[in-house]
Length: 102
Image (cartoon, rainbow, N blue to C red; front, side, top):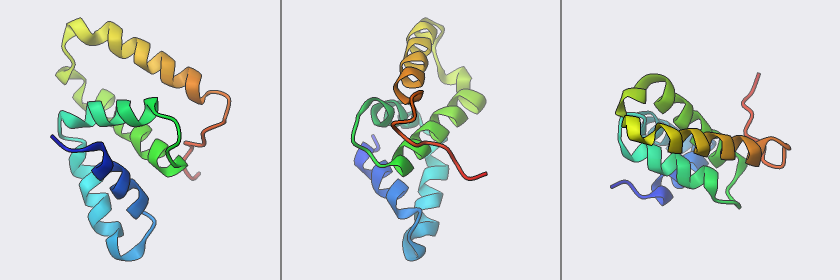
């Protein structure tokens, strides 16, 4: 089981030159794990993280839904839907900046 703290460290390291490549590789590889669902949900559900951490968690969840939705058991669809609505409500007012560069 990958600890959420490892994700937060990697998200923070994506802006530092020497560890940026390893951090990006970790975040990329995380997309293929079952732990990604839990980590993204934990980060997005917990206040006080950095905007960068929220951005990477939202991106991770988006990728899991887009490319690995088949990992979600049908019995969990409703729970996932409610989680997504909760995240949208939490971040809708702009108090958390999770937008990427354009």
